[in-house]
Image (cartoon, rainbow, N blue to C red; front, side, top):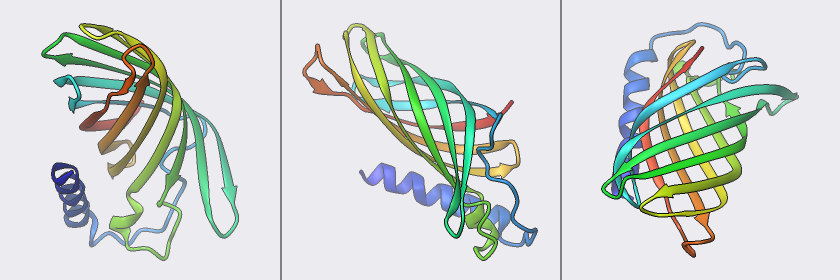
Length: 175
């Protein structure tokens, strides 16, 4: 838990130091209809260390007046872990809540995009199982197409009768 909090603090400081002086007006949400977003990074999970990545397509946005635009997408995730030579695969429906359209916020806060996902996941290799999967994460956009990304993923593997988890830190970019 302490490592997770430290990662969020580092991400916040990085975004603040990069964008504190930028006063441009708010624009479209970070996850806009038609966007294809890829991510990759290093992870730590219930099976050890590894690498992971994924892709997401934003198929709809809904602008709720006096609230925020929401982005709806479909994502796939894959991770490869060691020790244990484990492969996690999942498909998720996602919801994005971006801060970019809140012009009253300081610029560094508008660079954040939060997401949640729900879907199905599976595990192959030294461990085997499948079941529902939950994901959540945040991105801090360093440019319109590049972001630092922190992600937490928790599948419930029915065959293993338990919950696995993976935390990933990496980069995200719009293709």
